[in-house]
Length: 195
Ligand code: GRF
Image 1 (cartoon, protein in one colour):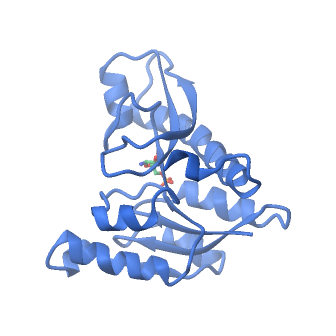
Image 2: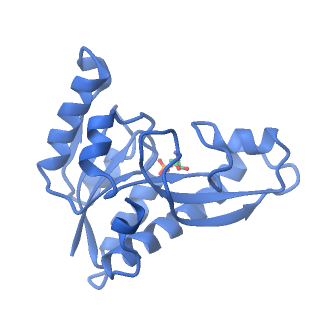
């Protein structure tokens, strides 16, 4: 059984997809804890599923490195096989990446390396792209530059707003995330190949 720690900053619909998948006794992974860097709405999903949560706010620390140290300690307390950044809107300090990667995944609402960064959906629309996508990557020290583990295209529809397109991407992103966790658990994906 693969143990997961999921880090979020927002609504946590990707987290919810993993929690729901874990309800199936056949699903070979369990979320053992959920962490956040703020009062993220998605923490409620964890609480509803009886999964412990922790919160480590950057503003409580003198610098990013000290914040990262505490975050890493909280993560490692759960001894997870895999850590998933799922709408976690902060860059992790290098020491955290070094300690966890390649067992550290990020979900991203674009077909990387297209449209990295925090405004991927807006950027795809601004570029007039006819299609974008969703990606699951191994985190490295760059911004959305790590090796791609799984990705899928999502067409841009005429008149799409940022919100409408993002919601359609997230449907694909959630499915891709659950499938990727399954593939890692059953050995179809070996993260050491992405180190
Ligand atoms: C996802 O599209 C994620 O890739 C992006 O923010 C969104 C978070 O969605 N960084 P949710 O919090 O899982 O609903």
